[in-house]
Amino acid sequence: MARSATYVAGVDSSTQATKVLVVDPSDGSVVREARRAHPDGTEVDPRAWWDALAGALGEVGTDDVAAIAVAGQQHGMVLLDEAGEPVRDALLWNDTRSAPDARALIEELGGAEAWAEAVGTVPVASITATKLRWTSRAEPENADRARSVMLPHDWLTWRLCGMPDEPVTDRGDASGTGYWSTVTGEYRPDLLELAFGRTLGVPRVAGPDEVVGHTEGGIAVAPGTGDNAGAALAIGPGAGEVIVSIGTSGTVFTGYDRPTTDASGLVAGFADARGGYLPLIATLNAARVLGVGAGLLGVDPAGFDELARAASPGASGLVLLPYLDGERTPDRPQAQGRYVGLTTANGTRENLARATVEGMLCGLADGVDALTAQGVPARRALLIGGGSRSAAVAELAPDVLGLPVEVLAPQEYVALGAARQASWALQGEEPSWRVPRETSRDVTDATISEQVRARYADVRDGRAP
Image 1 (cartoon, rainbow, N blue to C red):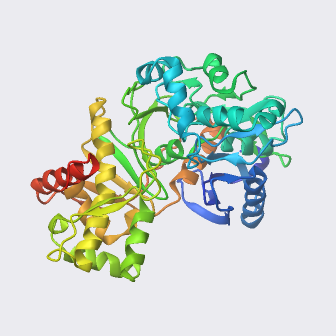
Image 2 (image 1 turned 45 degrees about the vertical axis):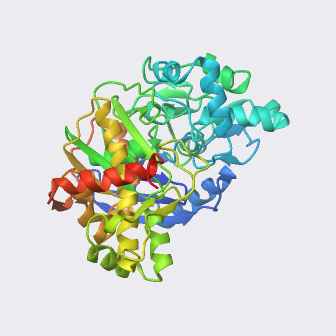
C-alpha cells in the first residue's frame, strides 16, 4: 500500500459537523474516529469546514493512513473569486431564500418537464443553480467577483490536494447542482448561464475509483461524493431495498440502473458514487420533529417513545403535518407544521406523541410512493440515521410505510462510504464489506398504512376540516 500505511480515512462534512473515520480496508472496521462541530445557520464560511476537518484529522492521526475521501452535504454553493477565495459565505442546502428563483428558472426553461428531461431534477430552493440565480439577483457585486463555483465536498477535496489548478468533483454530487445532467452525463453550460447570467469555472467530474491527487503528506485523495451517495456506497442496498434516512433531513433513496426524470419534482434524479443512479426524495423535517414532540410533552426521548407506543394506530384521529421548517417534498418552503383533529376525546399525551411519529413517517412514506411511481421497486426499507434509534419509530415504521423494515446498526454511514471509496481508489477494486443489520420487523397489519396515510393525505392536501 502507498506510504507503507495500513488504513484509509473517510470524511462526512455534514450540515452540523465533520466526522472522520479511520478504517481497516480489509474488513471495513472502524479503528479510530473524531468529530468537530460546524457553525449553525443556513450560510457558513466554508473555511470553518476546513478548520473542522483539520482538527478532526489531527485528533485521529494520519501517519498510518494511505488514502482519504470526503463526502459532504449536497447542493451548497461555494463561490470563489479569481484568487480562489470565497466570495461570500456558502449557502447551504437548507437555505430556502432562493425558492422564488427556483420557480423563475422552471418557467424560463419551459416548465418542470423540460428540467426533468434536461438534468433529471426539477429545481427547488436547495438546488445549487437556484442559489446562483439568487446571488446574481440579490448580490450583484458578489456575483461580479465570482469566477468559479464548487460544492462543499469539492472545495474540501481541492484543499486537501493543495488547491491545484483543476479541481474535481464526482457525478453523485454534481447531479445535485441543476447544471450537470444524469441524462447525458455531462455539464449543461447553458443551464449554468441561465442560472447565473454567465458561465463559471466548474470542477472536472472524476470517475469513482480515481486517485485525484495527494495531500501534502502523500496521502492519496479519492474524488469523494455527496452525503446520500456516500451512505448508499457504504450500505449497498439490494434490489428492492430502499434506504430511509431519518436525520436532520429525511431521505428515501436507492441504487438504480437507469436515470429517472420525474416532472412532478418529487424524485430528484441523482447519480450515485458507483457509476449508476440514485433516485432520491428529501424532506426538510425528520428527526427534529421527534425532538419537538418530546419537548412539547416535557419528556426525554425514551419517555416520548413510551408515550407513542401506548397509543392506538391513527392516534384516535389526531394528525401532525410535520412541515416545521417549510418543506422540500412537497415543495412548500413557507409551510408550517400543525396538529389537526384535536378534540377533548383524543387530546392525550399518548396521542400527541403517536401523531408526531406517524406524521413524520407519513412524510417519508410519500417519498417511497414517489420512487415506486418512477418504476423503482420498493420491497423493504432499511432505516438509518439518528431517528431510526427511536423505539417508537422502529415499531411503527413497518405499518406506516407498508413495508418490512430492517434497522441498520448505528454507524457514520456517509463517512464509511467515503472510506470505502478511498479504499477502492487505492486498491483498484471496490471492497466487499457488508454492514450489519440490527433488527428486522414485518408489517403487522396492512390496513394501518392505508388508514393512517389516508387521514394524513386529507390534511396534507387541505381536505381535512
